[in-house]
Length: 451
Ligand code: LLP
Image (cartoon, rainbow, N blue to C red; front, side, top):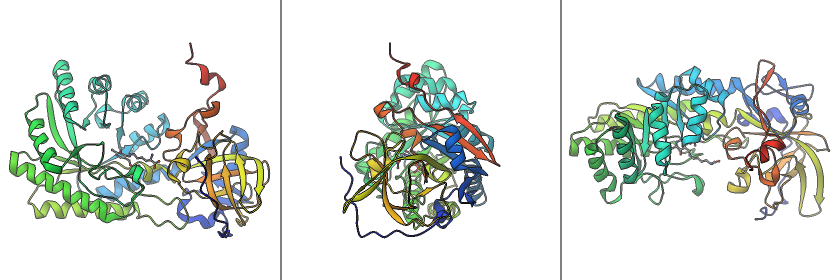
Protein backbone atom coordinates (compact mmCIF):
# COMPACT_ATOMS: atom_id res chain seq x y z
CA UNK A 1 0.00 0.00 0.00
CA UNK A 2 1.56 3.28 -1.10
CA UNK A 3 0.55 6.88 -0.63
CA UNK A 4 -1.31 8.56 -3.45
CA UNK A 5 1.15 10.65 -5.51
CA UNK A 6 1.61 14.14 -4.15
CA UNK A 7 -0.17 16.89 -6.05
CA UNK A 8 2.79 19.17 -6.66
CA UNK A 9 0.61 21.97 -7.97
CA UNK A 10 -1.16 22.31 -4.62
CA UNK A 11 -0.50 25.69 -3.01
CA UNK A 12 -0.30 26.40 0.72
CA UNK A 13 -3.36 28.26 1.98
CA UNK A 14 -1.42 30.57 4.35
CA UNK A 15 -4.19 30.16 6.89
CA UNK A 16 -3.32 30.40 10.55
CA UNK A 17 -4.92 28.08 13.10
CA UNK A 18 -7.91 30.24 13.91
CA UNK A 19 -8.81 30.44 10.19
CA UNK A 20 -9.69 26.75 10.25
CA UNK A 21 -13.22 27.50 11.48
CA UNK A 22 -15.53 24.53 11.81
CA UNK A 23 -12.80 21.94 12.31
CA UNK A 24 -11.70 23.56 15.58
CA UNK A 25 -13.10 22.49 18.93
CA UNK A 26 -15.20 25.31 20.35
CA UNK A 27 -12.74 26.54 22.99
CA UNK A 28 -9.72 26.68 20.62
CA UNK A 29 -7.81 29.95 20.86
CA UNK A 30 -4.30 31.20 20.24
CA UNK A 31 -2.34 32.97 22.96
CA UNK A 32 1.23 34.16 22.40
CA UNK A 33 1.55 31.91 19.37
CA UNK A 34 0.42 28.79 21.21
CA UNK A 35 -2.77 26.79 20.61
CA UNK A 36 -4.97 26.53 23.70
CA UNK A 37 -7.92 24.16 24.00
CA UNK A 38 -10.09 24.16 27.11
CA UNK A 39 -7.78 26.85 28.46
CA UNK A 40 -4.81 24.46 28.31
CA UNK A 41 -1.62 25.09 26.28
CA UNK A 42 -1.39 22.17 23.86
CA UNK A 43 2.39 22.41 23.41
CA UNK A 44 2.88 22.32 27.17
CA UNK A 45 0.41 19.47 27.61
CA UNK A 46 2.28 17.49 24.95
CA UNK A 47 5.51 17.92 26.86
CA UNK A 48 3.90 16.95 30.16
CA UNK A 49 1.93 13.93 28.97
CA UNK A 50 4.04 12.83 26.02
CA UNK A 51 2.90 12.25 22.46
CA UNK A 52 1.07 10.88 20.56
CA UNK A 53 -1.78 12.16 22.70
CA UNK A 54 -5.54 12.28 22.20
CA UNK A 55 -7.06 15.44 23.67
CA UNK A 56 -10.78 16.16 24.06
CA UNK A 57 -12.35 19.55 24.61
CA UNK A 58 -14.91 18.64 27.26
CA UNK A 59 -16.93 21.83 26.76
CA UNK A 60 -17.22 21.08 23.06
CA UNK A 61 -18.31 17.49 23.70
CA UNK A 62 -20.91 18.58 26.26
CA UNK A 63 -22.15 21.32 23.97
CA UNK A 64 -22.73 18.91 21.08
CA UNK A 65 -24.53 16.40 23.30
CA UNK A 66 -26.76 19.13 24.72
CA UNK A 67 -27.32 20.61 21.28
CA UNK A 68 -28.52 17.24 19.93
CA UNK A 69 -30.94 16.90 22.86
CA UNK A 70 -32.18 20.48 22.49
CA UNK A 71 -32.49 20.37 18.71
CA UNK A 72 -34.56 17.18 18.72
CA UNK A 73 -36.58 17.69 21.90
CA UNK A 74 -37.63 21.22 20.95
CA UNK A 75 -39.14 19.88 17.71
CA UNK A 76 -40.36 16.44 18.56
CA UNK A 77 -41.87 15.42 21.87
CA UNK A 78 -40.44 11.97 22.34
CA UNK A 79 -36.82 11.66 21.33
CA UNK A 80 -33.76 9.83 22.53
CA UNK A 81 -30.25 10.71 21.48
CA UNK A 82 -28.26 7.49 21.51
CA UNK A 83 -24.51 8.08 21.53
CA UNK A 84 -22.80 5.61 19.18
CA UNK A 85 -19.90 4.66 21.41
CA UNK A 86 -17.96 3.01 18.58
CA UNK A 87 -16.91 6.53 17.62
CA UNK A 88 -15.11 7.06 20.93
CA UNK A 89 -15.42 5.13 24.15
CA UNK A 90 -13.90 5.51 27.56
CA UNK A 91 -15.42 5.72 31.02
CA UNK A 92 -15.21 9.51 31.16
CA UNK A 93 -17.17 9.89 27.92
CA UNK A 94 -19.75 7.35 29.07
CA UNK A 95 -20.22 9.22 32.36
CA UNK A 96 -20.79 12.52 30.54
CA UNK A 97 -23.32 10.91 28.20
CA UNK A 98 -25.10 9.45 31.23
CA UNK A 99 -25.04 12.72 33.18
CA UNK A 100 -26.58 14.61 30.25
CA UNK A 101 -29.29 12.00 29.74
CA UNK A 102 -28.24 10.38 26.47
CA UNK A 103 -28.72 6.72 25.67
CA UNK A 104 -25.82 4.57 24.50
CA UNK A 105 -25.31 2.42 21.40
CA UNK A 106 -22.94 -0.48 21.98
CA UNK A 107 -21.94 -2.87 19.27
CA UNK A 108 -20.91 -5.88 21.24
CA UNK A 109 -20.04 -7.30 24.63
CA UNK A 110 -16.85 -5.27 25.01
CA UNK A 111 -18.46 -1.88 24.53
CA UNK A 112 -21.28 -2.99 26.82
CA UNK A 113 -18.84 -4.04 29.53
CA UNK A 114 -17.09 -0.68 29.36
CA UNK A 115 -20.40 1.19 29.59
CA UNK A 116 -21.59 -0.88 32.55
CA UNK A 117 -18.25 -0.50 34.33
CA UNK A 118 -18.76 3.27 34.16
CA UNK A 119 -22.18 2.86 35.76
CA UNK A 120 -24.24 3.50 32.63
CA UNK A 121 -27.82 2.25 33.18
CA UNK A 122 -28.41 -0.86 31.05
CA UNK A 123 -32.01 0.05 30.27
CA UNK A 124 -30.73 3.06 28.28
CA UNK A 125 -28.42 0.89 26.18
CA UNK A 126 -29.19 -0.13 22.59
CA UNK A 127 -27.16 -3.11 21.44
CA UNK A 128 -26.08 -3.52 17.82
CA UNK A 129 -24.05 -5.94 15.76
CA UNK A 130 -24.62 -8.18 12.78
CA UNK A 131 -23.16 -11.22 14.52
CA UNK A 132 -23.57 -10.88 18.25
CA UNK A 133 -22.54 -14.15 19.80
CA UNK A 134 -24.94 -16.07 22.03
CA UNK A 135 -22.63 -15.19 24.92
CA UNK A 136 -22.82 -11.47 24.14
CA UNK A 137 -26.58 -11.64 23.83
CA UNK A 138 -26.91 -13.38 27.16
CA UNK A 139 -24.59 -10.85 28.82
CA UNK A 140 -26.77 -8.06 27.46
CA UNK A 141 -30.02 -9.66 28.56
CA UNK A 142 -28.74 -10.51 32.02
CA UNK A 143 -27.60 -6.89 32.42
CA UNK A 144 -31.05 -5.67 31.38
CA UNK A 145 -30.18 -3.92 28.11
CA UNK A 146 -33.25 -1.97 26.98
CA UNK A 147 -33.22 -2.70 23.26
CA UNK A 148 -31.41 -5.28 21.19
CA UNK A 149 -31.33 -4.53 17.49
CA UNK A 150 -32.02 -7.81 15.71
CA UNK A 151 -30.03 -8.19 12.53
CA UNK A 152 -31.11 -11.61 11.21
CA UNK A 153 -33.57 -14.46 11.59
CA UNK A 154 -30.99 -16.65 13.30
CA UNK A 155 -30.42 -13.95 15.88
CA UNK A 156 -34.14 -13.53 16.49
CA UNK A 157 -34.37 -17.21 17.41
CA UNK A 158 -31.26 -16.92 19.61
CA UNK A 159 -32.68 -13.99 21.55
CA UNK A 160 -36.00 -15.73 22.04
CA UNK A 161 -34.32 -18.85 23.35
CA UNK A 162 -32.13 -16.95 25.82
CA UNK A 163 -34.97 -14.70 26.99
CA UNK A 164 -37.16 -17.75 27.56
CA UNK A 165 -34.42 -19.37 29.61
CA UNK A 166 -33.93 -16.18 31.68
CA UNK A 167 -37.67 -15.73 32.08
CA UNK A 168 -37.76 -12.26 30.53
CA UNK A 169 -39.36 -10.50 27.57
CA UNK A 170 -36.63 -8.73 25.59
CA UNK A 171 -37.39 -5.45 23.83
CA UNK A 172 -36.11 -5.59 20.26
CA UNK A 173 -35.80 -3.44 17.17
CA UNK A 174 -35.46 -5.01 13.73
CA UNK A 175 -32.78 -3.47 11.57
CA UNK A 176 -34.10 -2.80 8.08
CA UNK A 177 -32.03 -1.84 5.01
CA UNK A 178 -34.09 0.92 3.46
CA UNK A 179 -32.28 0.82 0.10
CA UNK A 180 -31.09 4.42 0.35
CA UNK A 181 -27.75 5.07 -1.33
CA UNK A 182 -26.13 7.78 0.78
CA UNK A 183 -23.44 9.90 -0.78
CA UNK A 184 -20.33 8.83 1.23
CA UNK A 185 -17.31 6.51 1.06
CA UNK A 186 -18.41 3.04 -0.05
CA UNK A 187 -16.79 1.35 2.98
CA UNK A 188 -19.06 3.23 5.38
CA UNK A 189 -22.24 3.09 3.32
CA UNK A 190 -24.65 0.67 4.92
CA UNK A 191 -28.21 1.40 3.87
CA UNK A 192 -27.99 0.07 0.31
CA UNK A 193 -29.20 -3.37 -0.71
CA UNK A 194 -25.85 -5.17 -0.89
CA UNK A 195 -25.07 -4.93 2.82
CA UNK A 196 -24.31 -7.49 5.49
CA UNK A 197 -26.47 -5.53 7.92
CA UNK A 198 -30.13 -6.00 8.68
CA UNK A 199 -33.16 -7.34 6.87
CA UNK A 200 -33.46 -6.39 3.22
CA UNK A 201 -36.79 -5.02 2.03
CA UNK A 202 -36.23 -6.71 -1.30
CA UNK A 203 -38.77 -9.41 -2.19
CA UNK A 204 -40.66 -8.57 1.01
CA UNK A 205 -38.07 -10.38 3.11
CA UNK A 206 -38.12 -7.85 5.96
CA UNK A 207 -41.91 -7.71 5.92
CA UNK A 208 -42.19 -11.49 6.13
CA UNK A 209 -39.68 -11.59 8.99
CA UNK A 210 -41.75 -9.05 10.94
CA UNK A 211 -44.51 -11.66 10.88
CA UNK A 212 -42.08 -14.17 12.36
CA UNK A 213 -40.93 -11.68 15.02
CA UNK A 214 -44.51 -10.96 16.05
CA UNK A 215 -45.08 -14.67 16.62
CA UNK A 216 -41.78 -15.24 18.39
CA UNK A 217 -42.16 -15.76 22.15
CA UNK A 218 -40.19 -13.81 24.79
CA UNK A 219 -39.51 -10.80 22.55
CA UNK A 220 -41.38 -7.55 22.13
CA UNK A 221 -41.00 -5.87 18.74
CA UNK A 222 -40.78 -2.26 19.92
CA UNK A 223 -39.62 -0.69 16.69
CA UNK A 224 -37.53 -0.58 13.57
CA UNK A 225 -34.00 0.64 13.02
CA UNK A 226 -31.98 1.75 10.03
CA UNK A 227 -28.56 3.29 9.53
CA UNK A 228 -27.77 4.49 6.02
CA UNK A 229 -24.07 5.19 6.47
CA UNK A 230 -21.66 7.65 7.94
CA UNK A 231 -20.10 11.08 7.17
CA UNK A 232 -23.22 12.07 5.19
CA UNK A 233 -23.86 15.71 4.28
CA UNK A 234 -27.00 15.22 2.17
CA UNK A 235 -30.00 15.76 4.45
CA UNK A 236 -32.29 14.44 1.72
CA UNK A 237 -30.74 10.97 2.22
CA UNK A 238 -31.87 10.96 5.86
CA UNK A 239 -35.31 12.28 4.87
CA UNK A 240 -35.64 9.59 2.25
CA UNK A 241 -34.71 6.90 4.79
CA UNK A 242 -37.25 8.30 7.26
CA UNK A 243 -39.95 8.15 4.63
CA UNK A 244 -39.13 4.58 3.63
CA UNK A 245 -39.09 3.48 7.28
CA UNK A 246 -42.40 5.14 8.14
CA UNK A 247 -43.85 3.59 4.99
CA UNK A 248 -42.69 0.23 6.26
CA UNK A 249 -44.25 0.88 9.69
CA UNK A 250 -47.56 1.68 7.98
CA UNK A 251 -47.37 -1.48 5.91
CA UNK A 252 -46.78 -3.53 9.08
CA UNK A 253 -49.75 -1.84 10.76
CA UNK A 254 -51.98 -2.53 7.77
CA UNK A 255 -50.79 -6.08 7.21
CA UNK A 256 -50.29 -7.37 10.74
CA UNK A 257 -52.38 -4.94 12.80
CA UNK A 258 -49.28 -4.05 14.85
CA UNK A 259 -48.13 -0.46 15.29
CA UNK A 260 -44.57 -0.24 16.60
CA UNK A 261 -43.90 2.55 19.11
CA UNK A 262 -40.33 3.46 18.20
CA UNK A 263 -38.27 4.39 15.17
CA UNK A 264 -34.47 4.51 15.33
CA UNK A 265 -32.92 6.26 12.33
CA UNK A 266 -29.31 5.50 13.20
CA UNK A 267 -26.42 7.95 12.93
CA UNK A 268 -24.39 9.29 10.07
CA UNK A 269 -24.37 13.09 10.12
CA UNK A 270 -21.08 14.26 8.61
CA UNK A 271 -18.59 16.69 10.10
CA UNK A 272 -16.01 19.18 8.82
CA UNK A 273 -12.64 17.47 8.45
CA UNK A 274 -11.18 20.30 6.38
CA UNK A 275 -11.85 24.00 6.71
CA UNK A 276 -13.90 24.21 3.53
CA UNK A 277 -16.27 21.35 4.45
CA UNK A 278 -19.78 22.60 5.10
CA UNK A 279 -21.79 19.87 6.82
CA UNK A 280 -25.32 20.60 7.98
CA UNK A 281 -25.52 21.78 11.58
CA UNK A 282 -27.02 19.56 14.27
CA UNK A 283 -30.01 21.90 14.25
CA UNK A 284 -30.51 21.56 10.48
CA UNK A 285 -30.17 17.79 10.75
CA UNK A 286 -32.81 17.71 13.51
CA UNK A 287 -35.16 19.91 11.49
CA UNK A 288 -34.78 17.75 8.38
CA UNK A 289 -35.25 14.49 10.25
CA UNK A 290 -38.11 15.50 12.56
CA UNK A 291 -40.11 17.13 9.77
CA UNK A 292 -39.59 14.12 7.49
CA UNK A 293 -40.86 11.72 10.14
CA UNK A 294 -43.82 13.95 10.98
CA UNK A 295 -44.81 14.42 7.32
CA UNK A 296 -44.44 10.72 6.57
CA UNK A 297 -46.62 9.79 9.57
CA UNK A 298 -49.29 12.35 8.67
CA UNK A 299 -49.43 11.07 5.11
CA UNK A 300 -50.10 7.55 6.37
CA UNK A 301 -52.20 8.46 9.38
CA UNK A 302 -49.71 6.88 11.76
CA UNK A 303 -49.23 8.08 15.34
CA UNK A 304 -45.80 9.67 15.83
CA UNK A 305 -43.35 7.03 17.05
CA UNK A 306 -40.76 7.74 19.71
CA UNK A 307 -37.79 8.88 17.61
CA UNK A 308 -34.21 7.73 18.25
CA UNK A 309 -31.05 8.96 16.53
CA UNK A 310 -27.60 7.47 17.03
CA UNK A 311 -24.92 10.07 16.36
CA UNK A 312 -21.30 9.11 16.87
CA UNK A 313 -18.94 11.18 14.74
CA UNK A 314 -20.96 14.40 14.92
CA UNK A 315 -20.78 14.31 18.74
CA UNK A 316 -17.08 13.65 19.22
CA UNK A 317 -15.00 14.13 16.07
CA UNK A 318 -14.44 17.88 16.29
CA UNK A 319 -14.12 17.79 20.08
CA UNK A 320 -10.98 15.67 19.71
CA UNK A 321 -7.50 16.41 18.42
CA UNK A 322 -4.28 14.41 18.32
CA UNK A 323 -0.92 15.88 19.34
CA UNK A 324 2.37 14.58 17.97
CA UNK A 325 6.01 15.63 18.18
CA UNK A 326 7.91 16.24 14.96
CA UNK A 327 10.82 13.81 14.86
CA UNK A 328 12.27 13.78 11.34
CA UNK A 329 12.00 16.06 8.30
CA UNK A 330 12.71 14.71 4.84
CA UNK A 331 12.31 16.48 1.52
CA UNK A 332 12.21 14.37 -1.64
CA UNK A 333 12.80 16.96 -4.38
CA UNK A 334 9.99 16.98 -6.93
CA UNK A 335 8.09 14.32 -4.99
CA UNK A 336 6.97 15.53 -1.56
CA UNK A 337 8.01 16.84 1.84
CA UNK A 338 7.66 14.44 4.75
CA UNK A 339 7.21 15.50 8.35
CA UNK A 340 7.47 12.36 10.48
CA UNK A 341 5.52 12.20 13.74
CA UNK A 342 5.62 9.83 16.70
CA UNK A 343 2.42 7.98 15.89
CA UNK A 344 0.60 7.27 12.67
CA UNK A 345 -1.61 4.47 11.45
CA UNK A 346 -1.63 2.90 14.93
CA UNK A 347 -3.50 5.89 16.41
CA UNK A 348 -5.27 7.00 13.21
CA UNK A 349 -5.98 4.34 10.60
CA UNK A 350 -8.54 6.50 8.80
CA UNK A 351 -6.09 8.14 6.42
CA UNK A 352 -4.69 4.82 5.21
CA UNK A 353 -8.10 3.16 5.19
CA UNK A 354 -10.38 5.82 3.71
CA UNK A 355 -7.93 8.46 2.40
CA UNK A 356 -9.37 10.74 5.05
CA UNK A 357 -8.29 14.38 5.10
CA UNK A 358 -7.37 16.32 8.23
CA UNK A 359 -6.21 19.85 9.00
CA UNK A 360 -2.90 20.06 10.88
CA UNK A 361 -1.29 22.98 12.65
CA UNK A 362 1.82 23.48 14.74
CA UNK A 363 0.58 24.05 18.29
CA UNK A 364 3.68 26.06 19.19
CA UNK A 365 3.49 28.20 16.02
CA UNK A 366 -0.27 28.50 15.88
CA UNK A 367 -0.33 32.17 14.90
CA UNK A 368 1.95 31.65 11.90
CA UNK A 369 0.59 31.08 8.40
CA UNK A 370 0.74 27.57 6.95
CA UNK A 371 3.21 28.14 4.13
CA UNK A 372 4.25 24.61 3.13
CA UNK A 373 2.49 21.58 1.71
CA UNK A 374 3.55 18.49 3.64
CA UNK A 375 2.72 14.86 4.26
CA UNK A 376 2.66 13.97 7.94
CA UNK A 377 3.89 10.42 7.92
CA UNK A 378 3.89 8.11 10.88
CA UNK A 379 6.60 5.88 12.36
CA UNK A 380 5.29 2.53 11.16
CA UNK A 381 6.80 0.01 8.77
CA UNK A 382 4.29 0.66 6.03
CA UNK A 383 4.61 3.02 3.06
CA UNK A 384 0.98 4.07 3.32
CA UNK A 385 1.41 5.11 6.95
CA UNK A 386 0.37 8.76 7.01
CA UNK A 387 -1.92 10.89 9.13
CA UNK A 388 -2.20 13.82 6.75
CA UNK A 389 -1.43 13.80 3.03
CA UNK A 390 -0.60 16.99 1.13
CA UNK A 391 -1.92 19.60 3.52
CA UNK A 392 -0.60 23.04 4.43
CA UNK A 393 1.50 23.42 7.57
CA UNK A 394 3.70 26.09 9.11
CA UNK A 395 7.40 25.56 8.50
CA UNK A 396 8.15 22.64 10.81
CA UNK A 397 11.29 21.92 12.80
CA UNK A 398 12.28 18.91 14.87
CA UNK A 399 10.57 19.13 18.26
CA UNK A 400 7.55 21.13 17.12
CA UNK A 401 4.17 19.93 18.35
CA UNK A 402 1.69 19.06 15.61
CA UNK A 403 -2.01 19.21 16.35
CA UNK A 404 -4.29 17.32 13.97
CA UNK A 405 -7.91 18.41 14.24
CA UNK A 406 -11.09 16.37 13.94
CA UNK A 407 -9.64 13.12 15.27
CA UNK A 408 -12.13 12.57 18.11
CA UNK A 409 -14.11 9.89 16.24
CA UNK A 410 -12.94 6.50 15.03
CA UNK A 411 -9.27 7.08 15.85
CA UNK A 412 -8.83 5.90 19.45
CA UNK A 413 -11.44 3.17 18.97
CA UNK A 414 -9.72 1.87 15.83
CA UNK A 415 -6.20 2.15 17.25
CA UNK A 416 -3.78 -0.76 17.20
CA UNK A 417 -0.42 -1.76 18.64
CA UNK A 418 1.19 -2.19 15.24
CA UNK A 419 4.99 -2.21 15.53
CA UNK A 420 4.60 -2.49 19.30
CA UNK A 421 3.32 1.05 19.58
CA UNK A 422 1.65 1.65 22.96
CA UNK A 423 -1.71 3.35 22.42
CA UNK A 424 -1.86 7.03 23.41
CA UNK A 425 -3.36 8.42 26.59
CA UNK A 426 -6.64 10.33 26.43
CA UNK A 427 -6.78 13.70 28.17
CA UNK A 428 -9.93 15.76 28.72
CA UNK A 429 -9.34 19.51 29.02
CA UNK A 430 -11.76 21.99 30.53
CA UNK A 431 -11.51 25.42 32.19
CA UNK A 432 -7.73 25.39 32.21
CA UNK A 433 -7.50 21.90 33.73
CA UNK A 434 -6.27 18.73 32.05
CA UNK A 435 -7.26 15.30 33.38
CA UNK A 436 -6.01 12.01 32.05
CA UNK A 437 -9.10 9.88 31.46
CA UNK A 438 -7.30 6.91 29.87
CA UNK A 439 -3.66 6.35 30.69
CA UNK A 440 -1.06 5.71 28.02
CA UNK A 441 -0.31 2.05 27.39
CA UNK A 442 3.02 0.84 28.71
CA UNK A 443 5.42 -1.62 27.15
CA UNK A 444 4.31 -4.06 29.87
CA UNK A 445 0.72 -3.75 28.65
CA UNK A 446 1.90 -4.97 25.26
CA UNK A 447 2.89 -8.37 26.54
CA UNK A 448 0.73 -8.56 29.66
CA UNK A 449 -1.56 -11.13 28.01
CA UNK A 450 1.22 -13.42 26.82
CA UNK A 451 1.57 -16.65 28.82
N1 LLP B 1 -25.53 3.50 14.49
C1 LLP B 1 -25.07 2.41 13.87
C2 LLP B 1 -25.86 1.20 13.84
C3 LLP B 1 -23.79 2.45 13.28
O1 LLP B 1 -23.34 1.38 12.66
C4 LLP B 1 -23.03 3.64 13.33
C5 LLP B 1 -21.71 3.70 12.73
C6 LLP B 1 -23.57 4.75 14.01
C7 LLP B 1 -24.83 4.65 14.56
C8 LLP B 1 -22.83 6.05 14.15
O2 LLP B 1 -22.59 6.65 12.93
P1 LLP B 1 -21.92 8.10 12.87
O3 LLP B 1 -22.90 9.09 13.45
O4 LLP B 1 -20.68 8.06 13.66
O5 LLP B 1 -21.69 8.32 11.44
N2 LLP B 1 -14.96 3.70 10.92
C9 LLP B 1 -15.66 4.58 10.02
C10 LLP B 1 -17.09 4.82 10.45
C11 LLP B 1 -17.89 3.56 10.61
C12 LLP B 1 -19.27 3.83 11.10
C13 LLP B 1 -19.91 2.58 11.59
N3 LLP B 1 -21.21 2.72 12.10
C14 LLP B 1 -14.89 5.89 9.92
O6 LLP B 1 -13.87 6.02 10.55
O7 LLP B 1 -15.29 6.79 9.18
